[in-house]
Image 1 (cartoon, rainbow, N blue to C red):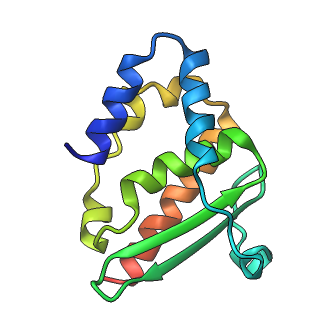
Image 2 (image 1 turned 90 degrees about the vertical axis):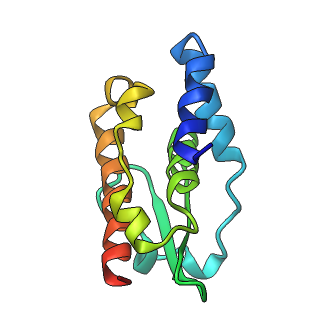
Length: 134
């Protein structure tokens, strides 16, 4: 089962958006802390209302790994959700990943405009890193 399928299954299991938000927050709690060396404007993700620091790395096997963190609980959860889908994937896999799952799980309807913009900024940055490493 793919990461996207797992996410869809997990969200379908929950009935209320309160429960879904709690799951997103819980996912964020699993994010590892970023090293202090990345907590500066060079690594700050533009386009997010909350403070988000983002780091990418090209691995020896030509996959990309990402680390990110935020000062906001929901945003940390959204980061964890997105990294679950894109982390340790090849640039071509990243660029061809279908993002319809975000609509399927209802995030397009249940996030504020600013959170949607921040989520889009993170996805855009991940895809930019993938394009740079093709």
